[in-house]
Image 1 (cartoon, rainbow, N blue to C red):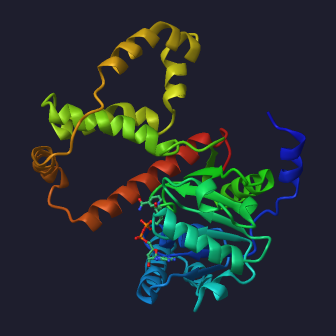
Image 2 (cartoon, helix red, strand yellow; image 1 turned 45 degrees about the horizontal axis):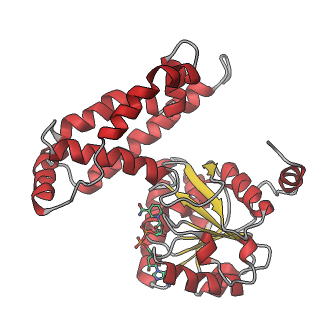
Amino acid sequence: MVTPTDESARSSVAPLPTAVAVIATGVIGRSWLRVFSRAGIPVRAWDPDPARLAQAVAWHADAVAAEETEPGRIADAVARITAAPSLAAALADVDYVQESGPESLEAKRAIYVELARLAPRRAILASSTSALDMTAIAAGLESAERCIVAHPVNPPHVVPVVEVLGGAETSEAVVARTMAWLRAVGQVPVRLNHYVPGFLLNRMQAALVREAVDLVARGVASADDVDAVIRDGLGLRWAFLGPYGTADTNADAGARDYFARYGSSYQALWADLRTDVQFDQALLDRIEAETEPMTRGRTAAERRAWRDRAVTALRALKADLSRPPGAP
Ligand SMILES: NC(=O)c1ccc[n+]([C@@H]2O[C@H](COP(=O)([O-])OP(=O)(O)OC[C@H]3O[C@@H](n4cnc5c(N)ncnc54)[C@H](O)[C@@H]3O)[C@@H](O)[C@H]2O)c1
C-alpha cells in the first residue's frame, strides 16, 4: 500500500542524479561505472589502489566498445568517467554514491565514516554489500538516514536486479529516491522491508545450491545433469516467471490453488532436504572432476564473455516480448 509519505517522497525525486561517485573499482565497482555511463550520468571513480582504478577505467572503455558501434557514442560514454585523484575529489558535488569496497563490517564502517564526512549532505550513500546490515554499518553516524544497501548481482551492467534495503535509521525518502534512480538508470530495484541474512537472492540461491551439491555428493546424478535440470528445465521458466508466477501458471485456478494442492508434497520434500552437506576434500575433488569437462576447454574469460552475451540476448528477448503488439 502506498502511504502519503511514500507519495511525497516520490514526487520530490529528480529524474536522475546529476553526478555519481563510484567508490572502490574492483569487480563490482567497475561494472557500476558502465551502468551509470550508459544512463548518461557523469561518474567520478576512486579506489585507494591507483592500479585498480586505472584497470577499471580501461575495463570500462572496453565494455563500452563491446556494446556501442558509433564512435561519437563511445567517446561520450568514455568521457563520462573521471578517475578522481582523492576520495574528497570523487565525492565533491555528487547526488549518489555507490560504494563497492571490501566485504567486512570493519572496512565498511571506516569507509562510511569518510563518505559521511566528505560527501555533500544531500548525497545518498549506497553500499553494494552482499550480506552486511546497514544498521550496523551506519551505527553512530550522524547522517545514518541517507545510508542504504543497494546490492547488485555480478555484473550489474549485465544483470539488472538490485536488492535495496535501509538500516534502522534510513529515511523513507532515501529508499524511494534510491529505488527511483536505480530504475531510471535501467536496473530493476527490489525492496526488502527489513534485513535478513543473505537478503533475497543469496537465500534463494543457497537453498537451491545446497540441494545441487547434496545430489552430486550422494551420487544421485552428475553435476552436468543437475545443471541441465536448471538450464533446460526450471531455468527456462524462471527467466520469465519466479516461483510464484510459476505456481500461478501450473494450476488452473492460480497460485493459491497450486499450493493448496501441492503444499503437502513440498512439505514432505522440505523435511527430506539435508542441511549438513560438508565441503570436505573428497567432495571438492568430485566437483572439480565433474565440472572440468563442462568447460569444454574454454578459458574463464571466454566462458564469462559467453555468459554475458547470452544474458544480454535474453534481456533483449524479454524487452521484445513485453513490448505491446505493433509497437516499434
Ligand atoms: N563479486 C561479487 O560477485 C559481488 C556481487 C554483489 C556484491 N558484491 C559486493 O561488492 C563489494 C565489492 O566486491 P568485489 O567483488 O568488487 O571486490 P574486489 O576485491 O574486486 O574489489 C574491492 C575494491 O575495494 C578496494 N578497497 C580496498 N580497501 C578499500 C578502502 N578502505 N576503501 C575503499 N576501497 C577499498 C580495493 O582496492 C578493490 O579495488 C563487496 O561488498 C561485495 O560483497 C560482490
